[in-house]
Image (cartoon, rainbow, N blue to C red; front, top):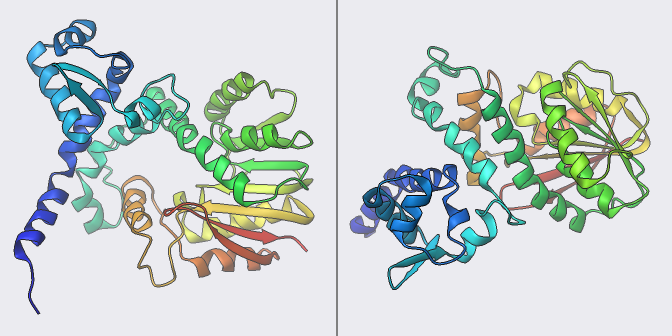
Length: 330
C-alpha cells in the first residue's frame, strides 16, 4: 500500500494550526468588527472606529480575507456573505453570542491533557463563570436554537400538542418558535433563576408573555407539575452522568399525561462510538467542563426512556451532529 506522506503532513498541519484561525475569528467577533464592514471600508477607517493600530487592523482584516469571511477590492474590505448573514449583530442568523461562548472556552481547552489524565476538569485555577460569560452562553444557545427549532418544526408534526414543558430551556428558543407556529400551544420553561431572567427578555421580545410561564429552580429537583403532553430535553443530557439522566427522564415521564411525547435532543453517538465526529469531540468538551457529562449512545438513551415506562418512538437525524429520540407515554 502506498501512502501520500505529503498529504498526511498537510492534514496534520491544518489540524495543528486550527487555533490560529479560531483566534482570528474570535478577535474580530468580540470587537464587533463585522458590524463595520457591511459597506466597503479601509483598514485605516476600521482602525479609527475601533481605536486599534492601523498595522494590526490591516493584518487582522487580511486574516479574515484568508478565512473567506471578508472580501477585498481596491484596498477596501467588506463582509463576505457568510459574515453578513451570521456575524453582523442585526442579522437574522447571528451567531456572535455562541462564538463568544466558544472563545471563553479557550483556557479550559488548553488544559485538556490534565483533564484526560485525571478524568475530571482541572480544578486548580478554575475561575467561576461570570455573568458576562453566562449571558454569552445562554444567548449563544439562542443563536443555534432558533435555527434548530425551525429544523425540528419541519420534521415533526407538533400541531396536536397543547401544553409544552421545556426542561432546562435556557433562552426559550424552542417554546418561542413552537408557539409562533402553533397558536393553540402554551409552554412552561424550567431553569435556574439567572437563566430565566434572560429567557423572560427573549419571550417579551417575541410578545409571548401570556402564553409562556416560568418555573425557577434546578431541573433535577424542581416540581414542574404533571399536565404536559409535550416535554423537551434539548442539549441537557450531555451535561449529566448516566444515573442523573435516568432520574431526569423518569421525572419528565412523571410530568407527562397519557399520549404525551418526550423529545430528547442531543449529540447522540452510535452504539460503537464511531461517530458522528462532532459528538466524539464534544465528549471532551464535557470532560473539561463537567464532573460527569458525556455524549451518550443510542442504546443508553433508549434504556432511560424504557425504564421510565415510555414507549419507543424513533430516532430523527436533525443535523449531521444532532439527533432526536422520540418516546411516548402509554
